[in-house]
Length: 281
Length: 281
View 1 (spheres, rainbow over the protein chains, first blue to last red):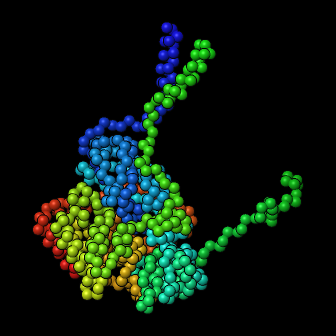
View 2 (view 1 turned 120 degrees about the vertical axis):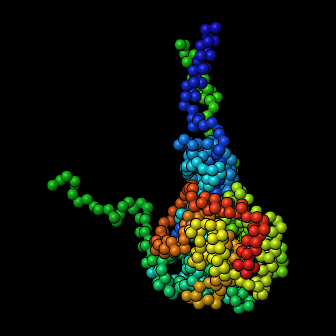
């Protein structure tokens, strides 16, 4: 009997000890009425300056209540996972207001990296029910190659105003020289044509077309330009194929980094040979 | 305590931990996919999938067939359906391009389809950027919206260039001409469906985009400042997610809902008719 009691006590104490380190998360406040807010999902491409945000549909967002703030909290603090659907808008039914929430972007769109990021914390203030509208935006900041949403890109990128010779290559698909070489046109953000060239070569598989660097590139302001690529047609005109953005930077490109030393050569020739033992006068 | 009992306790601790109810993050309903996804037209050069705003509109534009009214109607439907950032008006208040009563919706779209087909055949009227400016500002005045909701030719042109960059096949048609001279601007004219697509985009950004919710005068100053910013040539991909609340969206929402809900169906239809006529449709 004594053995049995000790065993039961041991089990009880073990559970107590083990559970003492369990993280059960914040204790949710009791649910009341009066909550409710909306969440809208957006994407934004900042790879070529401050991009234009656009509504991003079918994005899954997970919300975790963090804490209440102030004397006005109302609604339900339970976690939720909802999809913004075709309208890019989530309705969080009776979602807790006057509260901080962590919002986690879970869908790998518009860019895969969006789904790898930690949640963003936002305060949802008190308001008339469902008047709070949270905008959550996934922003693409930088990429090595500026490839537009159309799948076309220009290289080199950026292009430098100091580089007035060489070629610019449009990469994509559908380029053809059947009726003549494609036409490159470059527009500023106000829609003004700043340069125009004719391609000098087209890849046999239509995946790229190259043309000369515009001769006036040295005189255009640095900034973002929209390049259009048009294929020649049988009627002697052109059919617009696609567009891509081009980043023009003032000056010249930075010098390339020096090549690494061959393996096994240690630090030669950069080592400084010590000719006198340290400390010897 | 005997060694036997100590051993028993040691075995019990992990069992007890397993029995402990631990709060774990809810698993997302869709697991994050690999970062190396295929873009809309296949893998790109750096395996970063690129999202295209209004992709379905572009796809429907690709499917247009001369003299096939259904293809034009499908494009019109997609333009009305495509998310713009003001969908909370539809969800919360039943206001928006997707909430037009079916009989009125059919009349509007029939007019648009007819006008578009006429335009493409060379017999219909074009819509100008100024028409869109005038209609937007008429709506701002009609609904008593704040001054920052007004627009201008430069704002409309900016948004049109954005749409040309993301929907080149649809929005680039007619705007980009091969016989342009350097220094010339793209045509101010566009087709009726291009105009509606652009109008909705302008209205959407006036509703949600803090970078666009400026008076035309302020916006011009801000744009000039942005164009002077040097663009970085970092080669590391970076993403960020930001959540925010835009008080201007709530302000516009309150005003719009109040005015529109007080309109009779006759007044609403009259306004829609007036809008189409102002665009020459």
